[in-house]
Image (cartoon, rainbow, N blue to C red; front, side, top):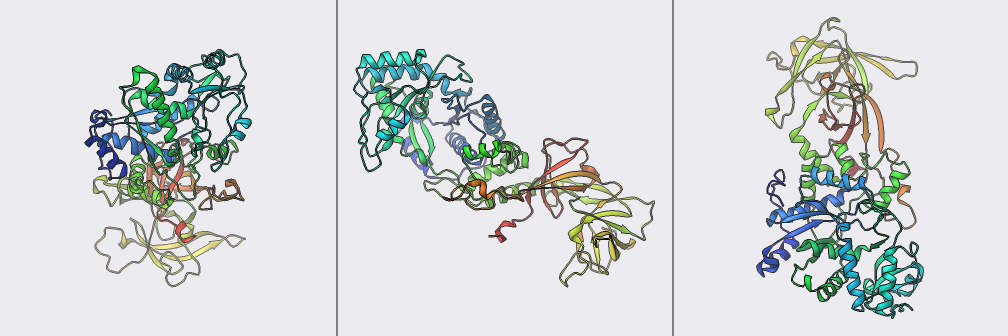
Length: 569
């Protein structure tokens, strides 16, 4: 890793079991004391919060041990891959605060070497061409408790296998007509060792190699070899790859035995950790793609999506996600993390660094009847009480202001500390007012509230002796800026939407995951830029949407000030 690659992520990483394993390797001077990890996404979708945890882990390991971390794309399936995903993944990794070792790497960089190694395994009698289709091969695989059945093509001669494999490469056979399989053990208790695929025929142009290839390596054949070629010392994978590890090692053993040029190279070691699982969320790329394709969300960067791009658009910060990954920790047991922890991390981060502003998302007009109609004045409010260096700002105040509709109640209970008829409270940063009456429309909905103010009670005045309970925020009606506010909530209303046997995850879509309201915001926000972040006083944290403009100001709710979902459980 470059020395300056992670300047904004210098926090000490908590110790975990992977550190212990690497410490042991270093004590034994394996790999000459080097530590080189990698983050190897498939370019077939956008990264999500689970990938973010893996990114933080792999790059933090490199940082901790003074090593490096490669960014490598496992681009072995041209049917599902696209340069759009390649670009978005690089953007996400950089946004999270990490830089990879040297240039970006691709599995496709090594296709020639993979092919050469496949030929060596065929010549060694360790691989054969199978003419059966996928269904026929699957039936012969057996079960975890019953051995498989050998393919009728398993004992082809080396010469015939070489000829067929070269003809596969030359494009003589249609997609799916033949596969290259490793010859291992059809009775192995590990299903992955029962003559797994190595290559399949796919007549599809590749986003980097074009039409050069019509055979492509299977992930299990490519992945370990990519690590081997790059000199990766520690291949950090999620737990589902633990059963793949014997195959990972088998391929490396055969290649090192068959190819003299690679016997002395660094041997990667695979270590598995538990992937991130969040409640009220799905992490499957297939399910996330389904949400996009069925227009349930606006795209991969919809703020309701658990994708890194969606979280960024919603207003999450790299620091909050890295802090979340650190708090979740690294274990070797699967568990489910409460999404409230992620929301807590962004609250904690934004609370320290963003300005408090006045915005009214459900406006109700308040008219101060004894305030001069033609008068305006400026009042001063602190930008962030957590950080005095952020200073203060001045807001215009006038006879008519907007307040939140739920800050008024006509028949209020005794412990209602906001506004009601006959009650005095303070408009934050301005004056104390007393409600004197209301005006309703024909449907009985309150249209206006009337009040009087006490000019001696301006904030900061030393002459006020009585205690004024209750403070609400406001926006001057004359100076207010119109804004569209998108109130995002959790996309699912079930804790485990993808784990229900008799239901589809789409059955649990939260119908209230997005509400759009017309708000009034203070004039200082009219020039806010995309991704600018604020705390709307007493409401929550909000971020300017990427589609916002000077003609149409749009805010996305990042998170409410408090977790309200815990009360719904």
